Length: 123
Image (cartoon, rainbow, N blue to C red; front, side, top):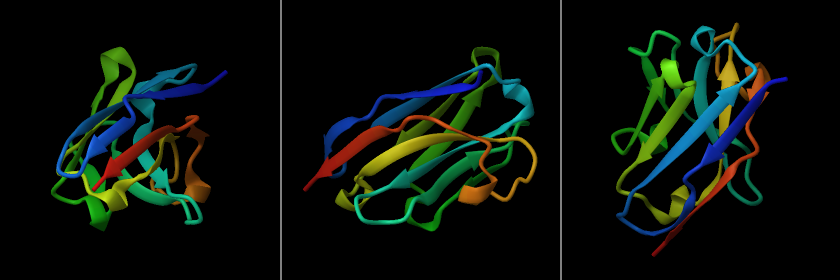
């Protein structure tokens, strides 16, 4: 049984910050790269950020570069997404994801998904 549970979503004004968390269970956490995707209504799910199992290499989608920071705590089986300078276009459901093999971070390559947490940014 593998479970990824997101928390920390909510409503924030443009320019504000939120910190998302994802707690993993039923998985050898340190063996997986972890990441975040997001999906707005009527749009495709898109890549946001990823962090390798070593914790020292990160990747970000172009729309969030310079504003979002991904981190992980392997001892606590937790990954975080610090979101600063939020914009209305960041509004979406954010999904935690785990990937153990491919490293490509496409939707098809994700091994496990969380249930999602809503982030709404008002203008």
